[in-house]
Amino acid sequence: MRRRSGLVQWSAFGAVALLAVWTCCWHLGRQGINVDELVYVQAGWEYVHGTVTANLEHPPTAKYLYGLAQVLFGQGVLAPRLVAAAAVLLTGLVLFVWLRRPLGHWGALFAAGLWWLTPRAAGLDAFDPASATPVRVDRIALLEPVMVLFAVVAIAAGWAWMTTDGRRRWWWAGLAGTALGLAVTSKVTAAFVVLAIVLLPVLFRRWWDLLTGGAIAAVSAIVTFCLAYAPLGLVSAVSYMIAFQTRHDDGGHLVDLGGTTYRFAPWWTQFWWATQGTGPVLVAVVLVGAVAAVVVRPDRLVLTLVAAFVPLMVFLALSTVSLPHYYDAWMPFVLALAAVGWTRLGVLARDELARRRAGRRDDSGARRRAGRPGRPGRVPVLGVALVALVAAGVVASASTTAALAVAVAHVRPAGIAVLDTELRAHGVDGGTILFTSYGAPAWRPYFAQRGSDVLVDGRYAAIVQGTDGRFPVPGAVRAFTQDEADALESFRVDDLRVWVPRGGGDVVVSGSTLTIER
Image 1 (cartoon, rainbow, N blue to C red):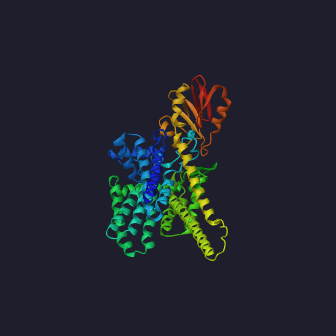
Image 2: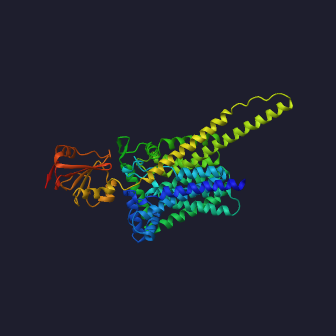
Image 3: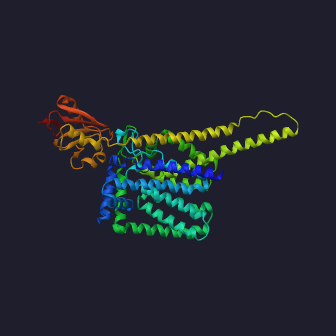
């Protein structure tokens, strides 16, 4: 019986892991290029070839890995995306190994599955293939996938440090510090994870470990940090990063939240992005699981996970810059907390049903011994309700997995990625493109040398209008496209609307006047 149970458990793990590999890797090359991704990929290529001057506003470790991947597998975004995908898969594996002892096989698998198989989009309309929005932050080569991997390894190693006896625990302390150093030198946001690591010896009341193991972890983290920054110049690179990020936060960053544009992101922006990126069903699953974890049994594991993500949330809430992918930094810990809650609801349901069955057996035995007839058993309302709730949670989670799988299966080059091809099909081969209602981060990866989103004097081969509410269409452009509708050919490329002079020619801008010249 135990062998059959083990076979079922590991077969389920294999199925979930295979689906995770497919979800992370399928059609990676078809996903549209993100401007931040392109910056990191190009900087990584330069770093491994000895030039370490690009993108110093962010730490270097993830970019080292992206550069090395390009050396091994070819220059471009695909190899770094495979690194990001590998980081996601390893993160789920670490969650599974870490949580298998406190939660059991199924609880740990649920935690890994929530991380592997649920959406975490980096923007709006991710489930529409025409939007070109990644349905998962980690399907493009941003810094978050690598940072998250090392942050989760740091917390998991810290947990092993506390739950391991003998000299081996010092190795875990060293690994926790090293992983923290790698996380922080991938993206500095991960620095807040140190609070959860420091809290662990306090929760376990191992004060000697706090001093000795804490010192080992601290030295490991500092050495790792210094080694990662050594090629860049430790003091100068860190000083530049701090100054840049301070200016960035002081100046804010335009975000469009539900049709309203903000220069300085409101405190709730990260939660808005998370809700949009994951969907209401997954939000409900996470909220119910998180509340259950805190209410049912708020033990050391729960407190550790809370300590891992709450400081990150507070920091992002206080920051005036909050981009669509930032919430990915705290998602693994929130999903793990939700898995803890759902697992314990399942245990409650099992124990309640077992207690009721045992009670009925004892009652029936007593009645038989007394010579009295048995009475019909009552429906175990609480046990049935808990089973129904857990089943609903599993079904809801599976529905988000299905939506993610469909979105991944339909990923294709869209919008700006195919604009040049469509322009050529309509007779426009080259020339400058005037972009309106479309942010530069979206078009620069494809039209950096021949695009403009500022209405300056010059000749333009086409006018392209996007859907970004942060950048309204200039009145002169709107009036021109309406007044010259007969002289312009208009067509759509997914979410983009394009105008080109009918029969050839250019749109000429002079001051606030637009005309067509053949």
